[in-house]
Length: 309
Image 1 (cartoon, rainbow, N blue to C red):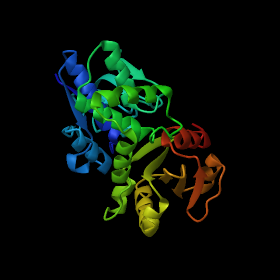
Image 2: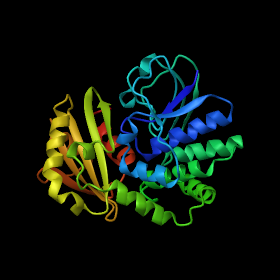
Image 3: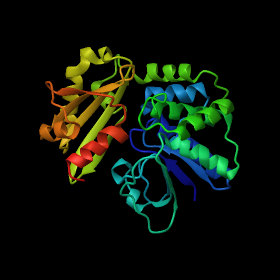
């Protein structure tokens, strides 16, 4: 049986590149594996589209139901971020860089989760440990994923291991100027003109269970907050619609990559919990949090503590 390798719902560049990379690693070791993602190619976010086109890679196959399949998970281990039927699937491996989620298995599996900035950093190490060469095109995608996840090394999630992986991968991929590559990706990632507000909210979005409360957190990385000035009301309405679908709160991180901070937009049943989580007060429906760059390290942990997780 072929192993379907896929990342979390609303896939970002790391989950796409990691699926391609890990599937290739499994195949190099003699296992039948295929890279998948939880959306159609038409739903790839703009940054991932640019990366795949730049390095000549094909988008992973779509997977909507995992029941009855052998699967390997990359860049997540939470049931809430998995496709339908995940509890009826045979999970054979997890490679990740987040906290350990609520996925469980009946048998021992390969589980490699490390406190680094990107899943592709973990995979780079796995390739090296197994003595398997990384193809040039896949190295380019992995390099791009690390630059994206670490915000070109500006994110507090960035580690020396991420920087070392970039140094390795840029040579294999033949990329001399990683700053230019990052800026190309940022231009694509931060493009908002003509994009429906709900699509922008879901461009990089995850749901979390916090003591029975469903909390949604989206993030838009921007060169300047001026990019969304004209559509803030539309974004807020989209958040209200998503919250109405059984959520306690929906947050949208409008992250200014240049200023290195986030304007956190909030829709909540109890905004005081959100304010307490970050030690700040809402000004209207948002609050500026200086230095906030990472959902994984700076946003979600604070929320979990506030909700008593």
